[in-house]
Image (cartoon, rainbow, N blue to C red; front, top):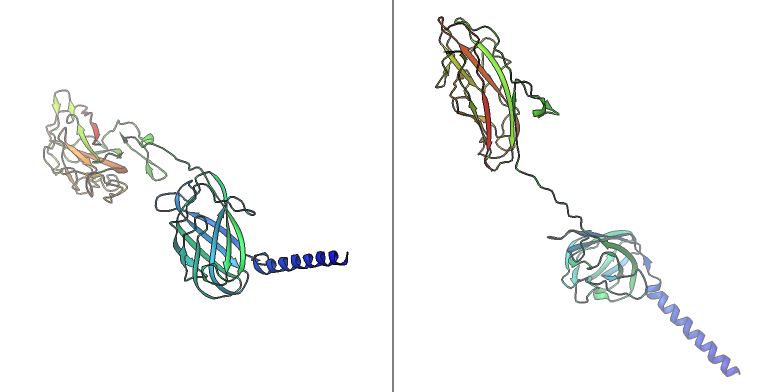
Length: 369
């Protein structure tokens, strides 16, 4: 009986020693704090894409001071217990990305699902925060959570003893693929005025195209009038705007159109226009009324410009069918919306027959896609 009891006590002593031994190894390892795994986009794939080749960035704080020679990252389907490598995961192409806090590592990726970084063991101060990124890891192929068990070792190549340990979690997720279409676009309008909304030209604000000259026609003064138009397009080679219509006419009587660009001359029959901010040299009422294109062209986002014959201050022209503007500032191309101000002049000779003179002008904006 005594012999049997002795054997039992001896067995219990051996078991106790075994537990003590385990406690001095992994069981007594301190827990890594502030630990996380961030899935970082790879060269082509999003960070959490199932089967995506991405980068895994580990961040953690080591509570224990002393030598650190290697750190293992063991990928598992569960946080504890038997470790089963997640389906589709591949770590055998892992490379070392960024590292901070604890540095000088190289990667060993020979064991699928359990890569580790290693270096010549060196002292680490307690509470040091480490950031270690492993690149070119293939995520698990199934959607859902996976775990990585992290162990720090006192020697290189997983030698020595485990000092600190901790588990992090991450999850793959279905990518959201958004699709939208930008169609061919042309926004164009004309009216007496076109205003802006939130500083952007807004064709919904265009007013009636019925425009009157500022005064009766006279051989001693120049009559002026204004209209506006706005245009934008995403056409690859931009737009051109033409003006179409007759000169000022009253029955069979007409005011001669300015067939070539020239200055305003009182007492001479002239009907012309331009798209510039004119001065009092052309008409006393021009300053502050005629205007340059707005917003001003920058050759990148805003390309609108007046064309030859209609792009010189105090010089006017009118030929039906002429191109008066295009989006070729900085090279023909697409442009955001801009407002043009068309300035019109009428001069008459002393023998111009009386009547109500009118002209119906049609501006046509043609984009080329």
